[in-house]
Each structure stands twice: as structure tokens, then as C-alpha cells.
Length: 262
Image (tube, rainbow, N blue to C red; front, top):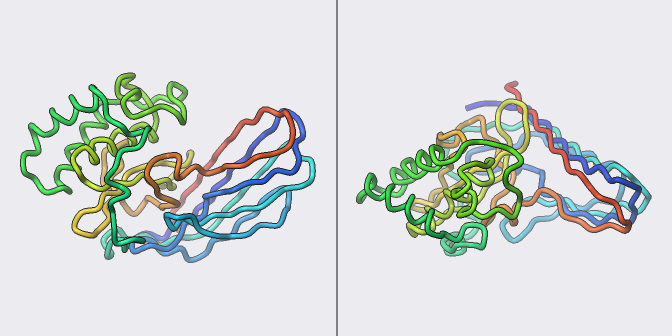
């Protein structure tokens, strides 16, 4: 069990002022079976009327509209969480896991994914799903080299595996592809990791009605240093920021995360 203090910062820098900026944000962690959010406060600049809701996956959402002209849009979330991975795993938001059994355009397997799965199956045999996932996690970790800037939000699992390089999003999409090809329900997770850096991604699989997390980027089961924010079928369901605005500006997004023990 760990008590963690978290700070999540996201900003959009625009090349020229924009206005009538309508946004939807998924950056608020929620209490689950393995984490308890004790405090959570947010600040959005420029100030605007903000409402909180939830999407179809149960993720917390903020949505609003910044009317005034601005060249910088900032969101800060601060809070504390108590994590305990040994506690009873998160209850399923829906008893039916079927939505997480099917591939998406970002996880659809091709020749490279098929070859990797075949090599893994030589090692897994008839092992239970959780044990197979440890093999899959290790295989994904060994198949990619972590490197920023070589993939983007539209890169598929098959393309990332062929490239052999990528970031946590790519590691997670490949693991999702393997799981679903093996008929194991699996979902994409966005969250925060102990230390300083950016937001992180990993995978949860449903085994016997319990969700268990695996982090292929670091080749570990999810631990008490992970704080979950959202989950979905792939990256697109968990996108931190979506919005539209009036103006011709280019935009650059920056995310900074700090998680420290209390």
C-alpha cells in the first residue's frame, strides 16, 4: 500500500490567439478497487464554466468552453491517492467484457503480430490467462526499443512492431492485440507513474471476473506506483484532450506528471 501525491499538468500552446474553445478532458483519476482518491482538485486557465461527467466507459470527464481569446490553455490537477494492488481488484463497470474482446483499427493484427503470438504460444501452452500475459508482456517489452518521436497517435500495433521502436502507447497496443487474438478481454489504460515524466499507458486484462494490470513498457505487473486515470478499447477512447476552437492557429500539447510518496 502506498499513499501518493500527484500533480498532472497539461497545456496547449497556440501559435496565435483562439476563442470559443470547446473542450473535453479526461485527466481526473477515480476511486477503484485498487486505488482510493482521497483528494482531487483541478484548475483550468483561462477560467470558464466547467462541468463534470462520465463517458460510456465510466471515465471521469471535464467539459466546458473558454470564450475569451487565449494563446495558452492550461489544466492542473492535484490530489492524493492510496493505492493497494493486493486489495480486491476493481469491479467491472459492466458485467459483459465482450467490448474488450474485439480488435480495433489500432490493434488489428497483421503478419508481425501473428508471428509474435506464435512464438509466445510455444512457451505458454495451456497456461492460465494471467500466466500467458506475463509471457506476452515480456515478449512485447523485448520486441520494442523505447524511443520518442518515431510513432504518433495514429500508429497501429502492427506498424509499431514492424518498426521495433515506440512509446508506451505502442507497447500497450501490441499487448492488446496479442491478448485479443488469444480471446482474452483486454483494455487500454492511461494513468500516472511514480516519479516525474509524462502520462503513462498500460493494459488491464479480465481473468475470472477480475481486472489485472500489466505494464509492457517496464515489463512489470501494475504496482502500487501506478495511478489509473481512464480506460477504453485503445488510445482513442482515452485521449486526454479533445476540442474545437475558432481560429487558424497551430497547437502544441505538453503533459507533465509528478507522483511522489507522502
